[in-house]
Image (cartoon, rainbow, N blue to C red; front, side, top):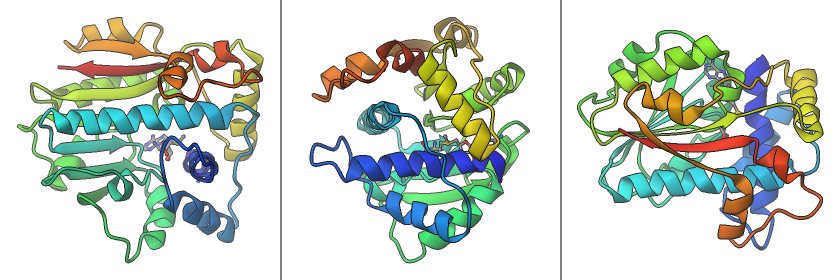
Length: 264
Ligand SMILES: C[S@@+](CC[C@H](N)C(=O)[O-])C[C@H]1O[C@@H](n2cnc3c(N)ncnc32)[C@H](O)[C@@H]1O
C-alpha cells in the first residue's frame, strides 16, 4: 500500500473543504473514499494545521487548469497519480472529453468499488501503472490518442518521486504530447520550514512514503523539453480566490510549493 496511502490523506482534506460553507470546490465523493479506506483498516494520515487550507487552494488551481485547457479545445485529459481524485465525476466537462486516470493498482483496488454505480461526467478510463516505469504503452493500449493535444495533471505526485524518476516522467509526458498540450503539476521546492518537516514526518510515519524536494527550477527543467511554464504560489492564489490563508498558516511553507502550468 505505502505511497497509495497518501491518496486518502488528500481525500480527507477535500472532504473537510467540501463541508465548509465557503468551499472552493465541491467533492461529495471524498468522504466516501475516506470511509471505505477506514473500513478496510487502512490508516488516514493526520496532517498538521494549515494543510487543509493549502490543499484546498491547490485543488482549485488544478480544477481551473483542467477546465481552462478544455475551454481552449483540449478533449483528452490524463490524471497522473489520480489517487482518489474525483474530477471525472464532479467537474463540468464539455462534451467529448476522454479522461485517463493513472495510479498504482493498490489505489484502484480501493477506489473503484466506491464508484460502483456513480456516473462519470466524461469518458473515464482507469490505467493501473507504476509511474516510475514505462507506462506509455499501457496508456496507449487503454485508448490514448497520441496525436491529440492533452492536458496532463499531476497533483501531489512529483514530491514522491526521485529526481531521475521525475526526469523520466517528463520525458514520457513530452514524448506523448502533441502540440498544444499542457502539463500542470506541483513541485516541492524545499523542506527547511517546520510545517513542511512536520508534514513529511506525518506522511513517512503513517503512509511510509517519502516527501522529497526534487526539481530546483521547474521553469528551466521544462524549457529543456520545449515547454513554456509559469509558476503560481498558494498565498497569491488564495487571495485571488477570495480565501486568503489564515494567519496561523506558514505562508513561506505553503509557497515553497510551486504550482506549475506549462504549454507546448
Ligand atoms: C498525495 S496523493 C495525490 C493523489 C491525487 N492526485 C489527488 O490529488 O487526490 C499521491 C498519489 O501518487 C500516487 N503515486 C505515488 N507514486 C506513484 C507511482 N510510482 N506510480 C503511480 N502512482 C504513484 C499514489 O498512489 C497517490 O495516489
